Amino acid sequence: MGRRVWVVLATVAFVGLLFTTVFPTRTFLAQRASLDASIEQLAVLDEQNRLLEERVRLLNDDAEIERLAREEYHLVRPGEKAFAVLPAPGPPEAPPQVGMPVEPDDANMAERAWEWLTERF
Image (cartoon, rainbow, N blue to C red; front, top):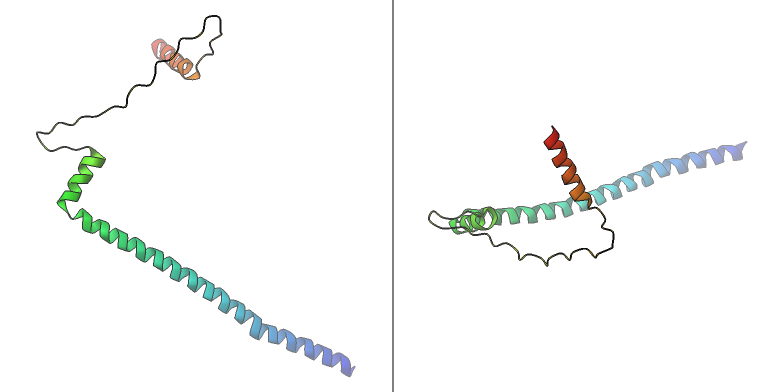
């Protein structure tokens, strides 16, 4: 019976040692990983803030505002004329070969069906 008591006491001591060392160590390592991730995220956010501050500085300049108005919104000054340059047309489509069946174009069928419906109703 004495041996059984020592085995139980050793098991309880071992479990107690696990609770006092392993679990706090795991918690410490998890917190350390979380801290590292937070530091990395902070660095990314600091860089984004720096870029946004630069953007604010640029947007306080009249020349930058005019450049954006012209490029992105296609605005012109009073008295100026705006022109849109269209891309060159593609090559003409070849007519279908005689005797070869022509497959219906789904887009044209949908357009014709829509026209038919709008004419009827």
